[in-house]
Length: 445
Image (cartoon, rainbow, N blue to C red; front, side, top):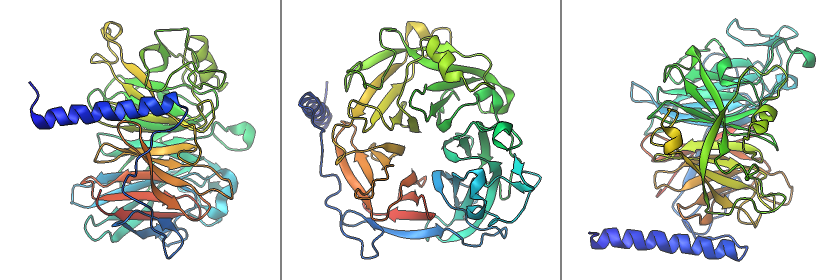
């Protein structure tokens, strides 16, 4: 029997779902005031709700502890608790070979032995930097280059073994003038303290990578792909927590093979709020020299997504964005709940489920969602990523009932990226992509 508080919680949940359903039926988006109206920032950088404030903890060009400089194009990021009580931010830099002047070496020809790839005598500038901070004062005690020699490190994901999975959003290879094929995932320990050797996890596939999330219960890694005809992948490791020891790569399909496209571009194949039983198809030759994983997966029944991007693990489930999904092409959010027998022979008898959690019908409320995180209160915080001069990007909050609100407005023309929370939930960190600025936000979360 439910007590009064439990009954109130159930009633509130049904009210929220009813609000979302009515709004969706009317072609509208369900909204909520969130934390209140955004207050103009006197510095003209980021508007926040009442009671919230930010500080810049790192920015482009700062000299780091290893003598290199903070690179540009700060993208995905994760936050970690270190054994000594400090916290670490591992931050991606989405740099291409032509961006050497914006990289950690400032255009100088530097090729550390740990680098994955180089061109014209210098390591490719893509990679990660790591910041070590005091969790109370937020003072940066050190920052250093932790991975280099890669291309377009876009997003990634945190792991239960306290590392950051950084992903290359590029499948360039020697035909493009670089030394190695790209499109890999790399594992960067949060407490490395120095530049680590870049070792690609090739069994996890080569494709136009975006982000990753690890189920702490099973060690299965879920991965998104940033293409208009992308798939949603999972990697079943032979040894959970030891990705370098290999495993099996699969793509998501639905039991109902009549639905092969989640994008809703040519009609509404998936309804907002609808759940669908998931199936998974095996993918061979994961190193994919022909860059054809998505084609081979789709031929086996893999479900198509519109630019799968940010992904984050919540409470027993994960959420991921599809940046240009939906009939209006303004973006979708998917939710996946794994099977109790995920990745085992018993899975088909009790399959996981996929839901179209949100589909934008109004660019003024939600447009081109990219990186996202799950806040301590269970809300999603989503980074918008669009580049119209007359439109500001926002950090959008989304309640568990699909109600949308503005948490922050970015007043300069760049995207917010890499949103994440400190382990105690007291501080939100977010990057401003270019010129690089990493912000710490505090307030009544």
